[in-house]
Image (cartoon, rainbow, N blue to C red; front, side, top):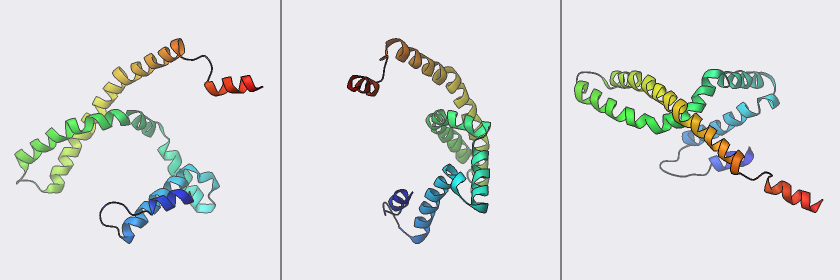
Length: 151
């Protein structure tokens, strides 16, 4: 954790202020708190445990599974939707309202498309990959072979 905090303190890119440093350090500390919540005493451990349990529910697990598809698809949906909203309603609506409209359209669309591609492409691809590795892969790991020979 100390190394991660030290690395997060290294200045890189743009304006470096105390606020940005504190945010980076808080993110690193928060990550470690969520991973190692059992080691935290008192209320800090209780709070970190509650957050960790919440983030490990089925919804967040599904979002983790869909995250790569979301990453690949989101700009394909976001750019045309945002361009349409700006071109049609750019001067009539405030920026926060335009943003809300774009999010309301893009979020469910991207999530649905990501679930479809995950179900129809990623899962069958993972199964095919496992089959290829089981059928044509090595029978034992190279590390284990070295251990067997030396014994």
